[in-house]
Amino acid sequence: MPGPRPGPPRRAPQGYRAYLIAVPAGALVGLVGGAFRWCLERAAELRGRLLEAADALGGAGWLIPVALAATGAAVACAIARLVPHAEGSGIQHVEAVWREEAAPGSPRSLWLLPAKFLGGLIAIGSGLVLGREGPIVHMGASIGSGAGRLTRLDPEDTRQLHTALSGAGLAAAFTAPLGGLLFVCEEVTRTVRPRLVLLTFAGTASALACSRLLVGDAPVFPVAQAPVPPVWTLPLFLLCGAVAGVLGAAYSGLVVGTLAVCDRLTRVPPVVRAAVIGAVVGLLMAYDPLLAGGGDPLSESLLAGGAPAVAVLAGCFAVRFAAGPLSYAAATPGGLFAPLLALGALWGTFTHAVTAPLLPSGAPGPGAFAAVGMAALFAGVVRAPLTGVVLVLEMTGAAPLVLPLLVACFAATLTADALRSEPVYDALRRRMLERP
View 1: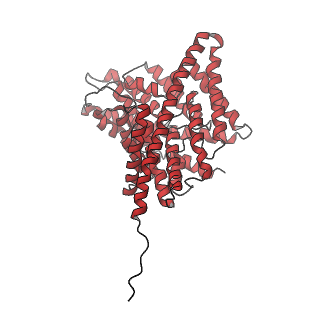
View 2 (view 1 turned 60 degrees about the vertical axis):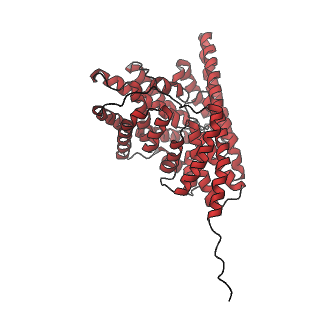
């Protein structure tokens, strides 16, 4: 008698292929992400020297930062318009691919990598209030889908590799491996799948091993170890987080609202609009360089315990609160995370400055409040509290702040949800899918 008919091919070999491909693809993500960070650091140094030279000129010297930011925004916008999905953060596109609302890529999407790299470098390097993480996440996802197509993985494996290497991109952007994994599970997919987790493990490990060759492996914002905050301070951190939730809801609305206003300016060419936005940011940069850029120097200063006057903190917060959404509306490559973290550090330091006269000795200092504010505002805007907590812990190494971070992020998320604020990337993904 003939034997039983062979069944369909087993799934395991294809799965193992995906794991093996994730390692070299993740290494490429690390090299690209590390190179992007290295180039941005050099661009920031060059911009600083240019601003010093402009300041020495006196009088008309303010025209130099205005021209720099306007030209950079216009050029970056022109580059982004050449490639679909190259403008903005790109995280909304990664989420749409996971939900099968958009394709992971096509032969034309190979141009996404240079468009994101060059456009993001020009936009962020010229001083726009944008973050490096969006372009790196999107480039990582693009490398993942490209590797899947090149090695002829099936569509489901290609989609998972696209998602997994977006997390490797976030890990390379902030030297935060666990943050990258949680970003994939909590923000992009909102689920935990063992296979996807393992793919993200493989890609993230190789990405960080390669990115450290270019940018090192030290925390992005190393802070001195502080004592564990007393339990009686937790209600204060709870209040800080609750107000951060209100601010986060307002910030999300401002990001989407600014984009909607710019969409209605149909008679103004996008490149001209970007130049005007860049000129406005250039004026801010001429007044004070800390008002422009991604915000890393500002965050580092506040986490180190820098405590400007209350009026200065409030003014800087208000300016950057508006400058971030305005810069994002320039339609250049660039993300929201880094400026959001700087804004949160301002909010946390402001909270400490206002409450300090009422606090007894032994209360946490401004640096602790800055770290908690970073995570809380992130949670209020992105609605990914655990990712915010772990990102801040990995970027600062401030392990004693775990409990205040959890309390503040809980309050921020709950408050933003109670206000019926849509998470910012949900709103951006919906806008992306509705546009022609």
